[in-house]
Image 1 (cartoon, rainbow, N blue to C red):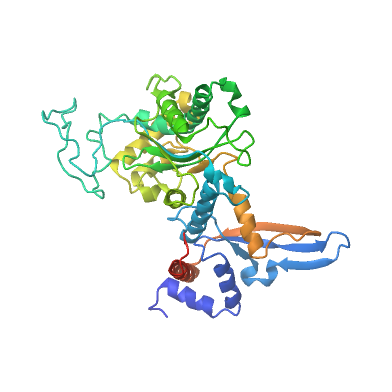
Image 2: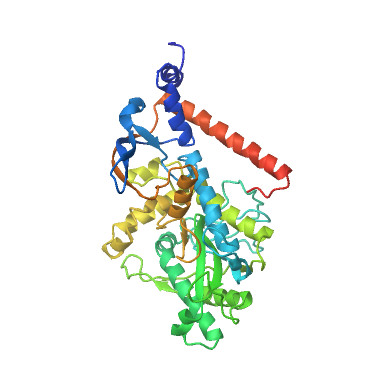
Length: 453
């Protein structure tokens, strides 16, 4: 036993426990969650009229007198099983807004729909993958003595891709402040799209909501240069939402024109700072508005939903554009395994976050995401269903739903989280087995002619 690792010794100890079978059931029920939350308490279900106890559950009958539940972390680097479940929910959330289902009528597949991409502006020249990076016939150097061009051909995995040609020329304050205002830029972009659509239809801008409604789901993605760009599914409905048909003038082409026009005109100005001045922030020049085929069910719809679901589970550390945990001191930046470019962006956030004029932006609290604030995925209220509804449907499917005519009395408290080394080893094996079983089932479904996702 002394020659075994700590994890192996702990796993053997758990396997010899009389309650091991029940513990294994709990871990399997969490899908092999890497960081389960442990709760203690009880739930009593009574008949609403007679008060008779129909069911009573108490963790005192469980191993270690606690119940383990999923951590529900969306990041694959933190918990792969929970991120996989989150990706599945995201897929169905986005897909429902494209094809219907989950309380959304199937008629939405006939609506004008776009897949929109908005990028960040340039903050300085960076190395690029693909063809020759940045060829210059006349050569030349910047004010800091570094070459203005690069004639190399970088592979996508080259560590230079996304890094500035000259870090001293790169506008790090503008990059960090653009991230901090990205949410406001999006809000004004959506307002601009509505206004352009109303003007194109000959309506007063304030009258748009009486004729149509813009619904969307968007995801933020970090590029190689550590700047966020936005992918969004945009749909036009009638004024009451997905159950209402849009007006005849609301075509996909007209929506695409409105998207491009709004993206070009949106401007957000930062508070004046003696250190930085006042910056005028805007979207980048690369704007794409790709119409999705009418009728739905095509490869575009599946690919868009799968893309969004795949990316939403990536953490900042996985993309190389930050860390998955907040920074408590400036020294944490130096200790993070990051590129000099990303580390400089973090230091810039930390420095600007100490200025009183930028205090509302909370740049130090968001230095780990390079100043970008908010959720990776956001959607308008009428686009489709919600994560909470999907989780409730899953609970009902496995028989954990509330029974009509009953009253539940519950009392729970948090008692810990995570695994011991041996438990982590066993949970990892369970997660791998479940993932393998899903893949086999998916292949079998495809072999039978199904459209597995």
